[in-house]
Image 1: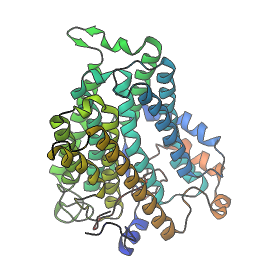
Image 2: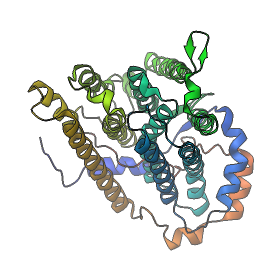
Image 3: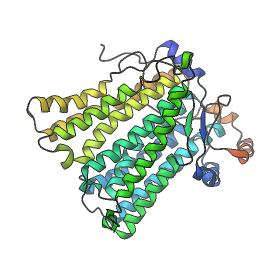
Image 4: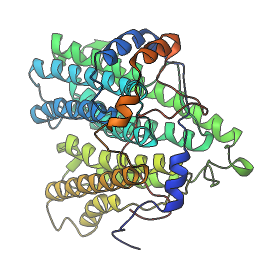
Length: 416
């Protein structure tokens, strides 16, 4: 087992990555209504602005606005100032809008590449954690820590399951009620808290408080996503004998993510100092970054048509907490939790950075810059004409890959 690998992706994986074509189907209700806004926004975007730079700027805004809420309410039980909720709503809106136009900007500038898809999905995996956490703080769900745990880990799991289905079928499928609808619902939650205060969610509606509607929405989303995944698994994958795109068992992706969720729940339940109940935001961010890296590895495995390893070095972080409990809390759990968080963040950044550099080197492109040749070859006029037809920010197998996507991901046959 090698702690550090000079290269994460081998030559065969990079070759398959360069041949990858983005395939996505969407039936989202809101996407059609938002297309005019997205098309107008991208038309005002400078041609020199790289698609990946658009995505990362949106993510940074989303993270910063959420961390302001975390600063005021680290236990999700406090009352942050109302402007913080309004700012967080703006942060989600900005991220959603910029995330929607990065693929359009890529086609507009002729800078489409598989790296764009990776970068977009990678940013989404991180944003999912922050958006879910921000929503929990907005309704003061920390007063019900088990519900908050379910809510946040449900969001991470559903995002992972969507890419698990893509790994099996070769196509990322969006339903009628999906990511865009969830993001705008959370924007509305923040605006309600900004207008009426977070305590409004404690209002009784029948025998339940309004805040439980957040959990109810998560349950509905889980039923829809897991139902779609189950149907895909029953139908079999696109690989040989019903296997995944990599020719592996369709059930193997369940194990890497289980190594995140199961320890998170066990540590939460066994903690003598109630480390999760007292520091839910930090706990969710720590395990959320592990989940983000594992999800990124799944996306990389899909795009490189490779097997996904079970073990991940980010799991060393949760292992610190687990071993500390085993040895009767030799160190205060709060300090170990911070150590875990620092480890997984550094490991996520290391992995993402290395993956991006390897792909950029292979494709001879820049991560945050558009080459002069691409910019010169772009055609804004033809872009406008094309997108008046029916651009859903989606491509088929025969289309060119969109530059919307994920960053930091994984390697198939090796531990990283």
